[in-house]
Picture 1: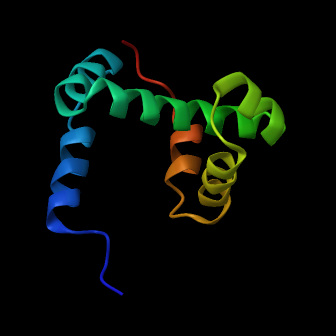
Picture 2: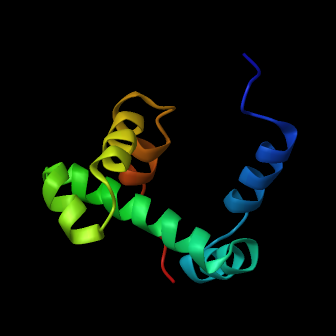
Length: 96
């Protein structure tokens, strides 16, 4: 199977790492993504935060309007993925 870590993805990751604060990151994300894409990304992150708090899939679905299938997929990546969610959860938050 071809690696998902393509040169294009690594360049994008370097752009993210180069940003120093939440305001700059938000501005970059807005320039990069459509509003629908931003909404989807923020929903997924919100779901990760709720899963970490132990909120049930059904409650998360009720609060977010996201299907339990999508929540299950996000939970799988949280537990079995590349570890990105875990690292982000543990990092101290930079100011806006």
